[in-house]
Amino acid sequence: MLLKISTPLPKDIPLELPLPEWLLVGLLVFAFLAHIVFINLMLGGSILTLWSQIKGLKNKEYDTFAHEIAKTITVNKSMAVVLGVAPLLCINALYTIYFYSANALTGFVWILIIPLVIIAFLLTYLHKFSWESMENNKRLHISIMAAAVGLFLFIPLIFLTNVNLMMFPEKWGTVHGFLEALVLPNVFPRYFEFLGACLTVTGLFVVGYNKRKNYPVEEIYTSFTRFDIYKLGFGVTFIGLGLQILFGLIVVFTIPAKGLGFDVISIMIATGITLIYAFYWTWKTLTGEQAQILQFFTKIVISIVVFLVLYGGNRQLYRHNALAPHQKLMAAKTKEFQKLSEEARLHPVVEVEVADTSEFGKGKDLFTKNCSSCHKEKEKLVGPPMTEMVSIYENNPEGLKKWINSPGKKRPDYPQMPSFGSLSNEDLDELAKYILSIKK
Image (cartoon, rainbow, N blue to C red; front, side, top):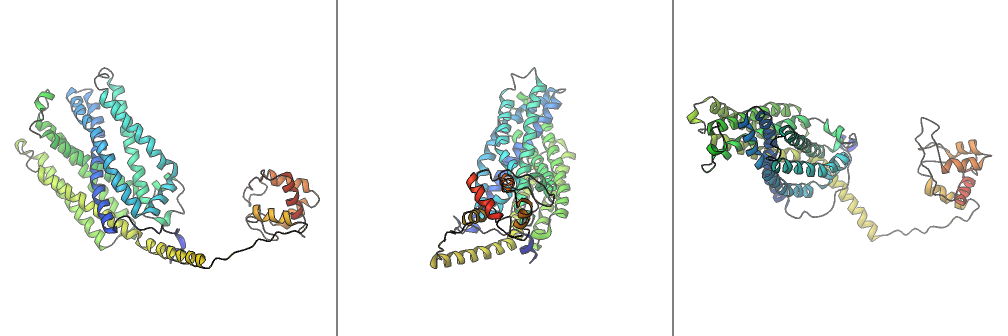
């Protein structure tokens, strides 16, 4: 009952889904996971490149490492974009009203994604292909990557805010723009958990990328060995896992209860266990013998893959639970609307409009079309009653016409009246004549 009272209930779009719902849900989860891995690599790689370049101002080896990672960013970016199409289409098909409502409420910032993405991508290409030409202007080169990282950090926050907002239609009436949606519960904890995941995946990528037998580490670096790079990669993963565990706990305690159930909580516990497992073996790797640096790499990778699958499935399960009551109400409203529409088509009512030919007929018609939504004859509606207009302009029809044509704001308890400058002078004459014919 409370959901009906406080929550907007738009009619759904009565169209069949292009595929069975279970298949669309499966595609959504699978495609989202494939997409988010490359998003993690793109953002995590950008952050790691920026950090390494800054350290490279004092140690040339870090600058070389930054160059090697920078080469992968644009590739991972392209994969992220291509793989992002499928989950976007699936979520549009499954949650059309919810997704578009959230986008509409954040309006300008949502549209801003397009130019921001274009600028960020161009900056990464500029950074990548100007490496040699800016060799003697490192600070400017670093600032290009810093700008790209800033944009890459902001763009996912927009997506996350919108996807979060779509799950809470009861908040739609109170949200007036991106900033209000941004401060809804759970947005920032989920965002920082996402940043931790970016570092986790990127650190493992660094290890895997450099452990290839045909990758000439010894030719690329002067003093860095494979062990040095492995340790750097595992160190990044360790920091990322730590952030995920920390902010994952905050997510658990701040997530709204409406979508929680035994199923969701059980999977949350399982995802937490996989993170702790990966964290433990990463710690063992960093504190173990140099010769055994890769001993637990496979265990860590498998645990992260299991985590991603559990996380993606649980995310969808929570969304389903959170929206199910609202979807049920919306389906009932849509069904009732379709029933009324069918009855109207089968039994159309034809109304014949009869013109009022009395002395004030034209003015009355103009008042009905332009003024009746805000003014009644003797009662306050949005604006004052007609009798109050008569008491002010009884002997001053020109003053009334002037006010209608270009109104101001007199009283703080009434809203600003819109201008009716489109009315002709003849229409204003008829309108004023009709209004002033009302008896006080």
